[in-house]
Length: 103
Image (cartoon, rainbow, N blue to C red; front, side, top):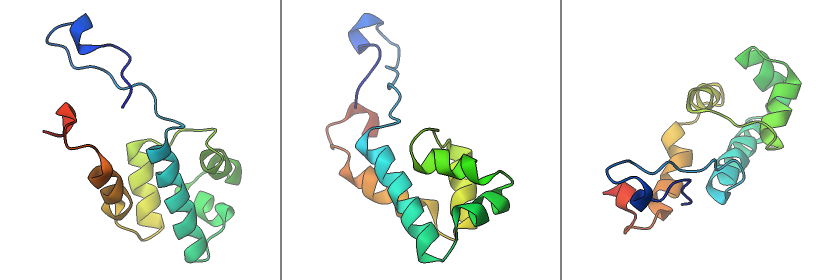
């Protein structure tokens, strides 16, 4: 993980992760949401309509032009009828065990 501030720059402060909009774990989350949407036969328009937005909103997320926040992610998972943990679990399990943020 990349950090905007080194822990030694400010003793006692938690380092802040940089945006991970294009990092591989985020891309994998979006890929799996797209895969699920298609698997259940839902179009971008269908998902947007169920969420209360227009199709371009979904398109921007799927093309990685707009970041999906945690709340939106959970609502998308509900609409797509998938447990949010099913997508996140493989990412969680792939984190290095020596990462101080996983202890």
